[in-house]
Image (cartoon, rainbow, N blue to C red; front, side):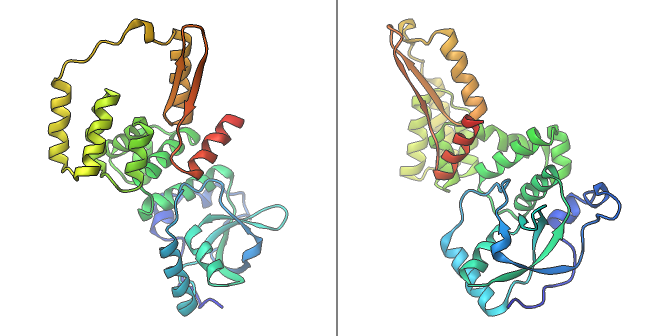
Length: 292
């Protein structure tokens, strides 16, 4: 059984960034500040969860801590019409509680719309710095698109400089291989910013592999990028160019799926369409977009 949780609200992440959520609820439907004990088997995952990777060893450590001391900070839930609950914030605590064998856990139960729920989930994760750089970038993009925010409005909401947000969003234009290396921690955010300025695909890949294999510093990567830009580009044969229809479709798919998309077409009209993904969860994300 969990120990008695600390008193208080949702914490600095949600409370300071989304202080107006309670004011948006109908009279008599204000979120409860009391903590309830909720059966774990009645809780479903948050469909707006931006985190795509969870470290198994860290979850095991948290599970051991929960066995010893219980859950200090309650998770946040919303109650569904059928009486079940949907997770708003606290994915790691929920997963670790299951590993620890708990049957119920302490929770704040809030009234929230889908939009508010998405905001809380994304902002809570961003504020806790639990996401890798690509996950942060995708979270920013989702907030901008789903909540119809400008970058300035997002900057104010999450407490980050506009330039910081812009730098993260630029990462989504990187090739899939570079995004995967950044998400896995094999290259740094600073390395990624250098690579973002190298448009030639072959030279981009060359610098990326050099950073990974030779452990180049950011300064060394910058020097390689400068040398690559100084080399004359090889002219591409017009015979190998895509027709405008295919080229435009490739651009649209890349923008919609936020992943590397490549279309190859022969002179006879036959070809292939390749969509890259970084992980199983990224594959599911892309598949969901295609099937809409």
